Length: 274
Image (cartoon, rainbow, N blue to C red):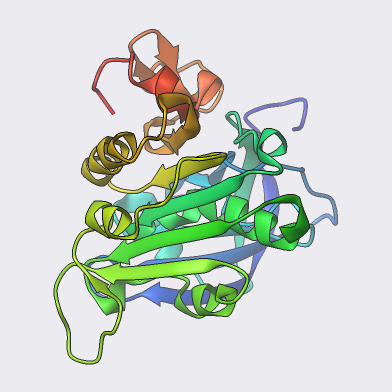
């Protein structure tokens, strides 16, 4: 991070992919440094991205820390800044500063079974964990991924998820039946219950819409997962990233300083503002 914490570094967009089209469009961007240098990050951290003249927004870093040549961001079109990103092209220059927030304690999970549960754009914040665990496959036991979208057209990272099959147990779901769909039909929390993952020597990591997270955690508890075995991230609350603006507070915590990664054992005692 530079001495001036408000001064962004410059990055060039090297790659853009349309993950999801339509009303809830999601695009994936690879941003490369212009000066040849780059900051390191850990799984779960975020960066402040800026489109000059349009604004800035805190976005989860969706690439593994093992990837050094670029940072990946998957952005849903929901507001002014995200819409500005969707209007950019390969070669355009953006601002980036970070990393911000804490991270998932992946080193503490070596030798354990990992259960990832994502919904919608919530796959992006946990994607660095998934890809890092797969790259270091020998350090972990069973890896299971549950992920769902409203429809088959809302499944992000579809090709990447299919490539994981064989080394990772992947379960995709959509909310309602579609012709040609052979995966699970129903909401993500129900898909988890349907497969009944064991809590033995396991860690569960979930991210997605708040209502999904609520019922996923309830179902994990029913399956025997203890609160300290469940992790989530509430990066959507983060604003300035340095604990100055006060807009990310949840009870006593500034999420950009204490979070965005929490175990459920920690998060359950904060006010239900997230």
